[in-house]
Length: 162
Ligand SMILES: [Zn+2]
Image (cartoon, rainbow, N blue to C red; front, top):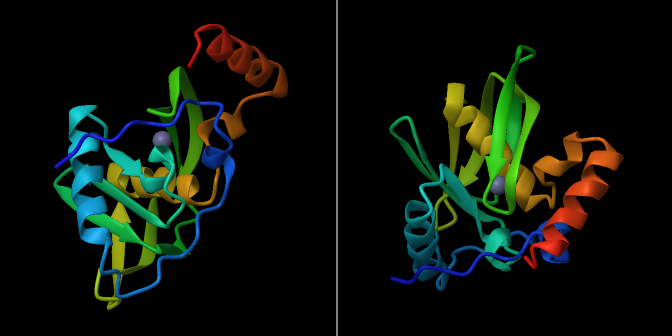
């Protein structure tokens, strides 16, 4: 297995919606294994393929005993109840943003054979899944900060050469 290189924060691929995976996905087993390896290496709760520059709707997560490979995931139900979640992201170093998330979600997901499954998530697992699904839509946690703050952050990241 391989630890994959993360895109630097200003790469446009991070702000681009990924393509749906054509299923069955013969070549994605290795990618998924590498995503897990990379996620564990960085002690992250989740990782989307977009973050390593592969614009396919694949993400992995492992949080609160919920280990889940997301393939073409779609939120089909969400609770009205929201929770404020303070989130960081491997793609946005040194940044924490408070983001309102649905407390519970139900997603339609696929396995690598293209078989669909419906998964209900709650708590931190629901939050992480929403964060990863955002990645697959090209949305970063920076969307929740003001444009002045965002501008400053982009400048800071540029200065740091990342
Ligand atoms: Zn992230």
